[in-house]
Every structure is written in C-alpha cells, then in structure tokens.
Length: 116
Image 1 (cartoon, rainbow, N blue to C red):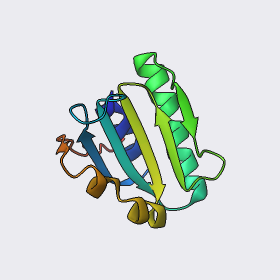
Image 2 (image 1 turned 60 degrees about the horizontal axis):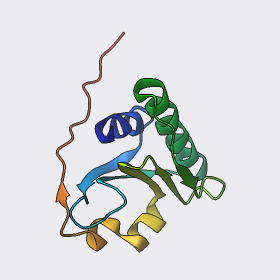
Image 3 (image 1 turned 30 degrees about the vertical axis):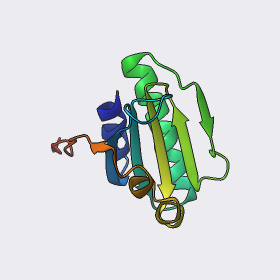
C-alpha cells in the first residue's frame, strides 16, 4: 500500500518521495510515506489522489485526514501507512526524515513513464 501511495504521488508530480519503515519505533503505523508538493492546491491534490487510488485499488479508506483545508501539511492515515504531503517550507521545518532518523528507508523506484 505504501508503494501504491508513492506511485500515486509520483503520477501527479509530487517530489522528494521517501518511504520510512517506522514499525519498530511507532506503534500506530508501519510506514510513513513523505512527499512534497509545489503549492497549497498541489499538496491538496496529491493527498486527494492518494486517497482515491488507495480506495480504488486496495479498497481501503483513510481512518482520518488532517490539514487538507490548509494544504501546508496533509496527513492521510490509513492505519498501516501514514502519508505526509508537505509544501517545501513545512517539510524542511518539521524534518520527519531527521526526526525518524533511525527508521530504515524502504526502497521505492519511480515508475517507468510510458508514452501513449
């Protein structure tokens, strides 16, 4: 599900996508998906697209969504994974990758882009 979320973000031009395995140090979730959007509307769109894709493909709705109206940091909580979509400034300020520095990065590669 985390890789599907990352793919959905990538499909809508989200950047700096990172997947962190937080299972050993965070009881409420297994994986954080962290990404950056260009602007408030872009962050909101990325979060909405993740919700739609996970619901359509995996049949899972988020347990909660926070920050959607502000669009600076949108958190989409699916239980096993939590998706964090930031604007650049808040991402640098909160620095989740540093805060969860002990968490292993999960390998994710950008999907191949096909013409047609």
